Length: 359
Image (cartoon, rainbow, N blue to C red; front, side):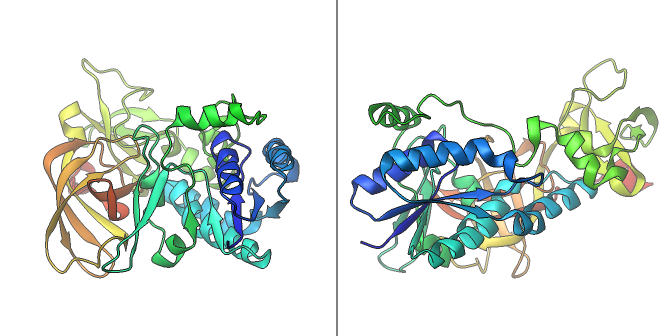
């Protein structure tokens, strides 16, 4: 069997993924990334957990310093998106440019033919077309295919998701059965490179202008308050707006050129169209005409029926059958046919016309 490198974060999913592969007879090595910008010590806990698991499994363990390329490919674009009033999804970029590219190149140098992770997703092969098909994980509550849509066919052909057919409870049970020291470790819901989930503090270091106070406008362009920096807001937000209103107001647009936040009633936070760019088609070729599918506009968003019309090689126009709350530029939109990922892209605009743009 070909050697497999497992991206070990020190968490239960990647640890069990390594155990499953080892027990299936694969030659396995563990690789742990250093990506946080502060220093090597900032990733010590995860590295030590991964090393302890690797020792218990009897597999070699390597620590790979990817901080420079991580800053270039993930952190810098993340900050740039926020400076433009968008809300990015760094996990998508990390998977495509770091785990399944930069880390895999290091793994290849160590003799590995595949890179495996603890993602809840699956890969099958279309026998007719030969395509690698990305599919949802068996545990639909933990499915992470949304974050993996940008992987290329080449990357998918060298990827493995050993726990994709297991539920989270089954994964934890396997960790306990094997006495792995991370069996009860809680899941992290934070972005890995932002300490203590302090988005504002992190972003102020890189884009201080986005922390400048500015006007809060209503849908008619009237100033009704002042915000504490664009980086504190996202489309659909209704808390901590710093305004007095007789009914809840939602952020419906962010205008970085004016350092302004536009708010409106809940119905104004809904939209039924968007343009997505940076498209990556996985299960199908780029459509030549309008097709229908189901789509997610956020990780936890319920899938909605859409019509997808190609605009050019890189972008599509998407029309929702039913209006959706908080279509957010910068987030990913991912298209599905059942449990199969057709493709996806980055939301560039929601098609919403704001009072500020009309002025």
